[in-house]
Amino acid sequence: MCPFTITRRKRKQTKDKRRKRKVPDMTSNLLNICRRGLHTSSVRQQIIQSTTPTKRICIVGAGPAGFYAAQYLLKNLSDCVVDIVEKLPVPFGLVRFGVAPDHPEVKNVINTFTKTAEHPRLRFFGNVALGTDVSLQELRNQYHAVLLTYGSDQDRELQLENEQQSHVISARKFVAWYNGLPGAENLEPDLSGRDVTIVGQGNVAVDVARMLLSPLDALRSTDTTEYALEALSRSQVERVHLVGRRGPLQAAFTIKELREMLKLPNVQTRWRSDDFSGIANQVEQLPRPRKRLTELMLKSLNDQEKLSSSASKQFLPIFLRAPKSITECEMEFSVTELQQDAAVPTAAIERLPANLILRSIGYKSSCADADISFDARRGHVRNREGRVLKVDASDSVDAGLYVAGWLGTGPTGVILTTMSGAFAVAKNICEDMATNALETSTSKPGFEADDKRVVTWDGWRRINDFEIETGKAKGKPREKIVSIAEMLRVAGV
Image (tube, rainbow, N blue to C red; front, side, top):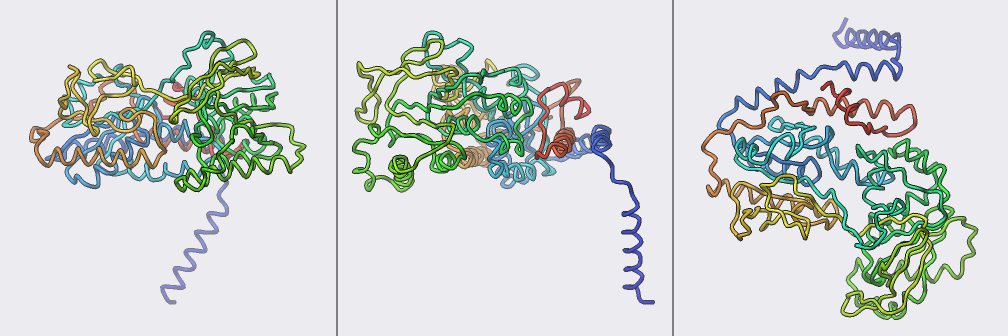
């Protein structure tokens, strides 16, 4: 009998055995995930620590900027080890907690980040907060270079009286609520009124509008949190006003976001024709992306008069309005006019109904450690091309300390913008090491967990598997764990 025949028989026997095995149910799968050991991580740490000579680099923040920088460093520095320290037990930052649930294609970048995280010269330390669990000075003592990439976690405010009332919340917190950021589950936005007014016209503002107006069935198959789906199922919101200070030519949302809004079932988009006075005459002189966006707005404006709509919900973009005051169920705006692209308030005012007000006028960062040279007014770290400046307010560079992402630039651009910026800063780190601007001949120990409850990459895998398995029963890609204590339990910490 030929070996090929024997092999075929063995394969058949193996398949027969597989068929006889009982398929484990979801409960068994979840228990298996929780029982899995973490031995791989400790071995991996020992292997890395025994490798010499090694340039040690610490990245604080496991969002897009952190992972892109790590990717560049590992590719271009063959003798470096990169450790990523993250405040939360889970990685991916804004991709996990900021990208809209109905944009799964944007989250595919997680696959790239995962490949970087599984590089043999990278370690992940989750549940470690800069300024609380470890100081910046401690990290600088343990590494040749420290790169800060912990993002923007605060909101810019309108600076209006009554802004702290319960019916006024930030779009950032609303996004965190439906995306499962730990702590945001207690937000409880009041969706019992007819009108929501969103102040701001960026992509985040449009994401929020879309989530409020989308059919619930379309969201049930996403990773929107269960408590958010429950709240949205009881929502009485019928009209969403999207209000901006400037005109259509300055709208900050992209054409992709607008197209999605225009295609929402049971939703009619209503523009104000006065907002577009003279706009058609300027279209041909616009740069291509702005031209395409403006043409789509004009087309939608022209079509709205021809189409009779039985839609029960409305999306209402409004331009040339600046926030003036807030009352219990209304928001007052100053009518503005453009002067050299700046919105200048006039004496005219308009009141809009607003059972809920969502502020979406930008993010800012916080200072996680007193040793960081931080510009509190602008809300970002003081730096020159990613090299952090000294705390003494001088223009000199603090050698060995870097910043990338929104923490260094402010909240601008999309994920691709963040990638380019992170690569540029990582390149500067490589150049500084190559030119001996950084002293790397002395060995550094790297992060020492001691008795801290640290989530390793293996711990994250267990959380990831648990979420995916839980989501399967609900027809969702995952059901996110929103409790840090539960994350730590599932991670085995």
